[in-house]
Amino acid sequence: MVRTQRWRTRFVAAVATAAALVLAGCADSGSAPPPPVPGQADTGAYDQIIAGSPVADAAAIPAGSWADKIKQRGKLIRGGTDQGAIFSLKDPATGKVTGFDAGLAAMLAHYITGKTSDDAVELVLTSVDTRETLIQNKTVDAVVATYTITEPRAQKVAFAGPYYSSGTSIMVKKDNTTINGVADLGGKNVATEANSTAVLALQQFAPQANVLLFQDDASCVAALQGGRADAYVLDESILLSDASTNPAFKLVGQPFTKEPYGVGLPLDDPSAKQFVNDWLTKIYADGSWAKLWKATIGKVVAGDPPAPPAIGSVPGS
Image (cartoon, rainbow, N blue to C red; front, side, top):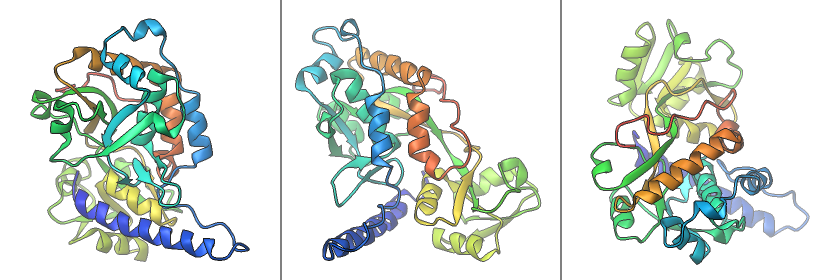
């Protein structure tokens, strides 16, 4: 993903601001409830989706298998983040981590253990540099953390999925009805960051767009807000963060380049990958995946949930 560290730093500041609002609200018992943390899911609906997702039959978890070890322990140990807007974000007031990735991990834990409580998942914070090591040394059972499947990574860990296809996306003002996808960018003023992968993506997929280059995310947001740009194009994760903290914006269409996210698993236990792929197949089929998308990513992306990516559809998965 482009500019991932800056996005996380900026969002930590947003979360800190929200935490201050929570503390201010506690000082006056007669005040209105504090606003929700930006990027946080509606926890009531979110919890119902997880509780309604499938639970594995006993025959699907053989004794001694990867899944059986998790079942016997009573919780899934997930590698991930608690600072990822929309995908895995910790509420500083409650400590609860929600989002699309966090919800998938909770669904997987529910599938294995039958539990819906927050303690069914233990989160171990990971980074780009530590993910493979933590999987290899069995510190975590799985990594669910916008983890892009690549062939070099697949030499070190196994990937189930993909479970989501991210990539270059489009953000517009909330009242914009003329831009609904990349095909609508021709002739439009489109902001993006200089030297980002989005520049090449626009050259390939929207060659008639009038591309405006800026040095950073804030400048692109300002151009869109002020009307200088009709759309802002960049990596979906960064735009989701922008839209989650600014109700004047929305994402439209689906990503028009591919960045497939997979569940990272131990390479030395093929049963883990097969088990998780079987589970993904079930939550695709019964609608749980789509409901979770709607409750998290769908809060800032306009339109219906996309079709889930085909399992095993990219090299390395």
